[in-house]
Length: 317
Image 1 (cartoon, rainbow, N blue to C red):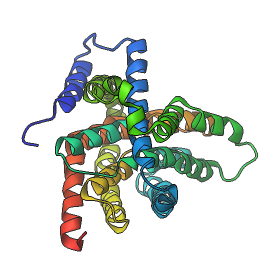
Image 2 (image 1 turned 90 degrees about the vertical axis):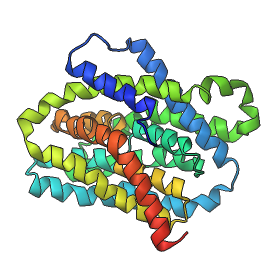
Image 3 (image 1 turned 180 degrees about the vertical axis):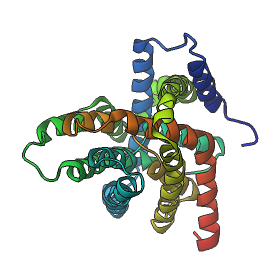
Image 4 (image 1 turned 180 degrees about the horizontal axis):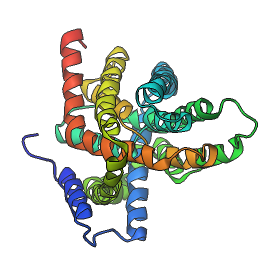
């Protein structure tokens, strides 16, 4: 795009307003409504595409994405934080879980970006958003505590599987899969036609929240800044190679790369709070929400799309 997408301008506006301490926070009920619409819409879109093909054809892709993105990458990130960043074990494990998981907000932005370019992509990518939340949390807990009887696995499972984010995504996927595109025509104006407007309001609030995390950078030095910028680029390169090797289109590869490069700030913090209470949540949220999230939506998404284009030109496909 030659100019900054309006939805990104909403994020910038929110971040500046937050730093200036302007009275601009969305009412809680409005923010929750916007979040619900965003998650359901992403799920519905994925469900529609999922209905178009046998689920068995997706199993190889699911296996690779979950194994690498959900299990292997947190194990790679952990020693970097533990030995280079000199974080405590619990903090290194918690941050690793955040970066092994994904950001729904970043996913929504890359969907809007690829759609604005009129580039086709595999819309079942929303399925990966759901699947990548869970394994990274499990790895993070094991890294922090080991396999321990004291770990409250029941509460963790309830928080992750029945938390609002996962529940809405799964619900949207099932509704879209069962109803199909024709069956959802009557609700299309509410969910699909207003998607970019809903995303703009969501990013406005995210900008305001991001501004509150920036003060932490003064306390923890440059490592989090470098990590929060370099790590998503590294992860995006891995995601690009994954997308190309799985036979995804350029658009699908760009979306997968962005997903792998993103970091959770909803499901993982809640799960870590229950299972690893000794971890400092400010460190994880500062890295994922204060640094990586704005970097990804302002710089990363166009960069990762370029990665996808170059990979398909160099390697074919």
